[in-house]
Length: 177
Image (cartoon, rainbow, N blue to C red; front, side):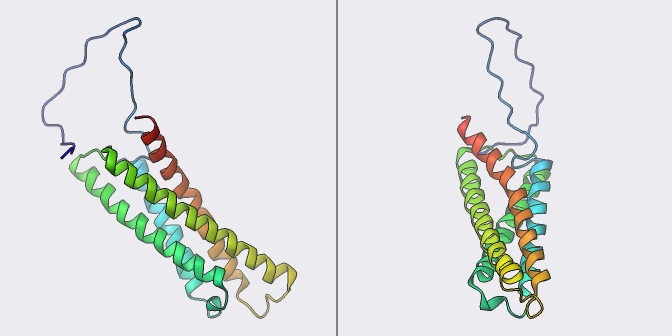
């Protein structure tokens, strides 16, 4: 099992080499990657905005009548669960002092982030299209909850916008191996 362990003994600096044979330097713990404070902040805001979109959309009485709004509720629900789960993993890794740069974990995180962020973006786009249709084209906002639809759609877009860096950092970490 290839697991990292917390550092117990100090490590000496490698000897300085100059010239052509200098060792490659790889930045492993960039803020925003798993098991960093930045990564935890991204996960927290992903969860916060996805949960807000889910709650706002689910509290309207007429969201079940439109398939795109159902899709938004499902996608933001999945995004909330994914972000909360990985936030818990990040908290554990930070408390114990573990690095989450295992190849299989990074593949898992990158795939999960890619799938959930794509679903959230697609749902937000579909909901935005329906909201524009209801508001501008049909002019029937007086009969619907347009403000709640717009708020939930905006929260879903913000959740996607915060989820995208997590995916890009994990994908970049995978590609740089």
